[in-house]
Structures are given as C-alpha cells and as structure tokens.
Image (cartoon, rainbow, N blue to C red; front, top):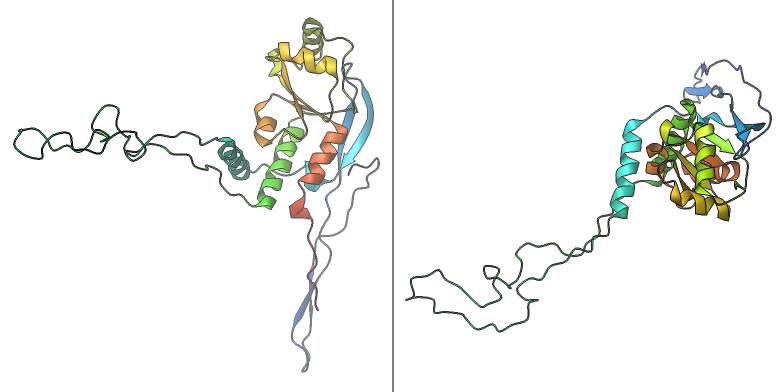
Length: 262
C-alpha cells in the first residue's frame, strides 16, 4: 500500500496515432499510456508526543483525489438510511383486540355512521395510515461508495487534517485530565475542532480516558468508522495500518480487469 520512495513521472501526455487504412484492414487507433500522477507524501507521527518519525508514500489515486461533493453526499445519505431502525409500528383495526359488533344502528339516531369499537374514529381503536416496520436502507454501487471513502480521506489530506500515526497508539495512564492537556498542547482538542482517532486495537488507557473527554475527540475502530465520521471531525488521526486497511478495502473501482478476448 504505502512505499518509502517515489519517483515522479514526466511522460508526455497520450497522443493518438492513426494507422493508415489498408484495403484488407479498417482504421485503428493506438494510444500511449496515460500520464501517471506522482505519489503523495505523508509524515508518520508518534502518539502522544506527535514527533515525526518517517515518511510514507501513497498513490495519488487513493489519497489525492479532487473533491466530489455529490459523491460524498450520496455516501452520507446511504449510511444514514442504513442506520435507521425502521421499528415504528402501530395497530390497524384488525390488530386491535375487541368485538366486531356494530356500536349503534346505522339509522335513526341522528348521529354519524359508525362501525365497531375498533374503528380509527374511536379512542382505543386502530390507527389509520400509521407506521409499520420497514427497511429504510437504500442502494449505492460499491464502486461509488469506495470512491467516496477515498475522496473523504483525500479531502482531509489536502486540507492538512489527516494525521498518520504509528501503530498501537496508547497513553501512559487513563487520566482524563492528562489526556486533555495532551490534546490541548498539540492543538488537536476541542478548541481546534476536535479529533477523530482511528485505530485497529487502541490501548486500554486511551479507550478509558477518551470517554471522559468527548468534547476533545472520539476514538473509533477501523471497522466501525464511516464516511460521515471522516467529514464530521475537525481532523482525522489514524494509525498507518488502519489507513492501509481502509484504502485497500475501498479500492474496488481501481481493480479493473482486462476483458478476455476468448
């Protein structure tokens, strides 16, 4: 996923070369390879000292994509619809317990027509047009969702709000006050928009202390984070192995298979 070295490519742009037609073959067009973008450079920091340790390179098509608000919007709506429970339920007149005997005669009373006591017009009767359990989830192509993931990470990287950390982030003690001082000192706390920490297996002290400092940041596993979380926090602080996992997981639109001629 990430490499330690990267060489920029200065190949010329694609040029169409037309081959003159022959009496036995139609006109064909050959294309040269497209211009490749250079890899992007990221600095890997240690936590909680936030000292730079080494550099890592990532492909531009994974961490340096242009902003696409439409794709991000579709991904957030898709995640929100999938999170809805859809368990609201009411009883129709057939579901209410009671007799089906007519309450009063149809004519002769001067009052409105009325059926049994389970009618929606009577208190305690059924609910007309009430909600019933249903599935609110909507569909979204996998390739579009994966592109939204890399677009969100690229958006944070372009703004300098993507901080890559060494694997296994942990603090010395599970004291909320000490964690608050660390985040304020490094300008990653509540006063600077808060931070989202993403880790594969965070330490026990960090997990316990961050529960008491919700205003400064949140801690999520790499298996529970989604696109909305990446866009909501002030900055994203993620372990290198978690970043590699997410980029590898959401790259289905880059795995293009060459169609077979057989």
